[in-house]
Length: 555
Figure 1 (cartoon, one colour):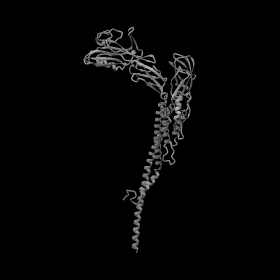
Figure 2 (cartoon, one colour):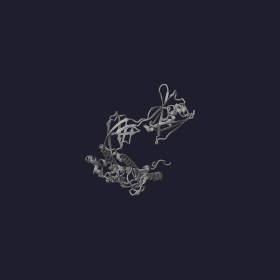
Figure 3 (cartoon, helix red, strand yellow):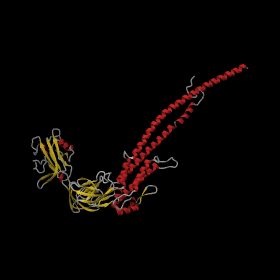
Figure 4 (cartoon, rainbow, N blue to C red):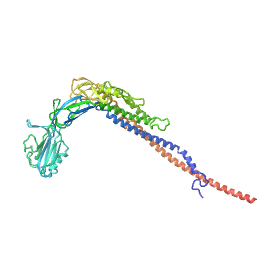
C-alpha cells in the first residue's frame, strides 16, 4: 500500500522537516517584505510631511500680504448712516461725513393689463443707459454700458414674455410684474444706481409701424426727451439719482452707495441720510491685529517644526525613531526652511531681521516671541513691520507707485528712468521696460522681471528708485509652493519610493513562485525517503522473523 501522508509509513516527520527548511528558504522573502514595510512607512511619513507643509503654507500665505500688517481700525460715528472699511493703506486721522442723499436706480412702469398672458405687441426693443439733463432736455449715453437689443415676436409678445426676455438677457436692467389687485404692471428697473444709469427705451413697432404711440409694442417706448404719450409712454416710478455727501466740507457726488474712491484706501457704505448732522469717521492703526499676525507666524512655524522633529527623531532603543530619520530629502526640507528663517531681509528701512520684532530661535529649535521687543517695535517702527513678512515695495518718488510683481521678481533696489509718456516708456534697473499705459513692467530675464510700477506724471529722466523686498512669510509661501509642486523634491522622492515598492512586489512574486517549487521538491524528496524507510523497515522485520524461525528450527 502506498503512503499518502508524509511520515505515516516510517514515522518520519516530513511536515516538520519541510517547515524548518522552508523557514530558511523564506528569509529572502522576509527581507523583501520588511523592506517594503519600511518604504510604506516612508510614504506615510511623507504624507504627514506634505500635510504639515500645506498647513504651514496656509498660515504664512495669509501673512504674505502687506495689508495683513498695515492693519487699521475704521469706526463710524453713526453706523446707521454709514459703515466703512479700510484696505490698510488709508491715511490715519478723522473725517466729518454728512450724507444728504442716497443713490437710487430708475424704475419705469406700464399698467393696464388684465392678465400676464395679454399680448403687448411685436418688434424690437433697444434699451440704452445714460444721463438725462432737464436743462437742455438731453440724454447723454453712458459710454461704459452697451445697449440691450431684444426681439419681441410671437414667442414672447405677452406681458410675461417681455419680462422674461429682458431678464434672460442678464444685462444691466431687470423686469418684474406687480399686480395691484385689478391690473398687472410691468416694472423695468436699472440694476445700477446713479444718474449715469438712467434708461432710454426705443421701440421699432412691427404691428402698426408707429414707434411712439401708445398702441402695440410702442407702449414700452421711453425717451426722456420726448413728450408724454409720444415716445415717453412709460411712467417713471423712481428717478435715477446720485449719492450726495460731503467729507470735511467737500461736496462728493457718486453714482453708487458704495463709495470706494472718495478717501484713498477707504470704502464707505452709505445706508441712510444724516439729517444734516455730520458723523465722525475715524481711522487708526490696529496694533493688536499686527501682534496677532506675528504670533500666528510663530505658532505656525513651531507646529511645522514639531512635525519635522517627530518624523526625523532618533531613539537610542531604535523602537521610536522617526520614519524619516537620516532621510536626505527630509533633511533638505529642514535646511531650506532654516535658511529662510536665519537670513536678513533687505527692506530699505531699519527692520531687517525677525529678532528686531522679538522673534528668535530657542535652544530646542523652536521660535519664541518676546512681547516686550514686539511692543517696542510696534511703537517705534509700526509702518515698517509689514516689510519683514510680506512682499512690499517703497518708491523714493511720490509719483511712482508700486502695483505688483511676479514670482520671478527678485528682491533689490531698482532705478526708474522715464523716457516718454502716453504711453509711458523707460527703463527699470537700466533695462528697457515694457510700457503699458502709465505703467512700466520689468523686462523678462532681468532681476526686475514682473516688477510693475505706475508713473502718474512728472519729468522725464531719472525718477528715483523702488526698493522691492520679499518678507519671511512671502518667502516661505514661495518655498513651500516649490517643495509641494509636482516637480518638487518631495514628489520626486515619493515617486522613487513607489517605484521601489513596485520593484519589491515583483521580486516578492518571483520569490514566492520559487518557494512554491522548492517546497514541492522538498516534500517529494522526503516523501520518497519516508516510503523507502518504510520499505526497509518492512524488509528488516521480515528478515528478523525469518532468522528467528531458522534459529528456532535449528534447535
